[in-house]
Image 1 (tube, helix red, strand yellow):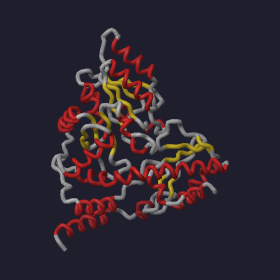
Image 2: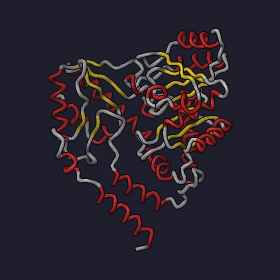
Image 3: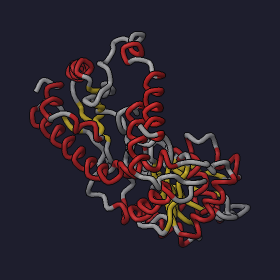
Image 4: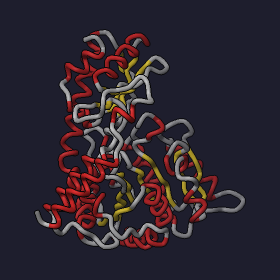
Length: 379
């Protein structure tokens, strides 16, 4: 056995030994699901929880078969290959790897604002609600929230916000408009492309530029034209760990000039990782198959919804602009029975709330046949 093989085998064994057993981890919780394995299914969420042992094993395999994988401060290797792949996918000139989506969003808005540090955002967006005011505290950007409780601001809301800023007692230009789509806090709703284009035209007429928080963009319905959707935006962020099997990371795409500035700010804010190939190679390896599998997952979910609706056991209550989160209205007793059957079978079913349950399209639904899911609801 050569030294590399020995070290890789030792790494996998060490991680496995350090992980608590599934039965031990579940012993304190009740009611317990069966141990997580390759047949476990999540009908809620973006993906299955990561399996550290499986991830480590896959990482060792990729490192062995890709000798040029290593990067140095996010240059060359798998990081550069991942950046090229996402630049092409999103239809942008360039792309940069980031350790977190929080940093990618913050840097993007700072680059786009330039000296005009006021930006319009959705009230329910990650940038406004989940990033500890990073843009405000670290870059002095004033975030103006729109569309409280809704995914999409109307064009009139955007126009009024720009007017109030530019024509107030002390006029201030809007530097950027940041739009999250899909919007996690609003049932994963997408912003309609026609509205995005109208907002982009209005913003640019006033000298503002656009950023897309597309963390979950790849989970959208398979008929979405991703380059066309990304086209109105100057910069686009996509997450790597939510559904591409990476332990961390994000990408930010845009023009060469914007991404060059973003890379500089990445270092300024402490994002200059010495090695990022571990995350990049896993996401890069998963990307081609994922694009096909998420389409199959959407088709499977659609068949399940249609069958339940046709049987009379449920009614669909999904948003018109749903991405991968759908809603089924059904009696509480049926929903709770389905949850219990799923618990015993290792299938996570969303809990009944306000007369309905959520149903998420993700690739874990492909692990079992449609009949297994119909059986949860007595079909």
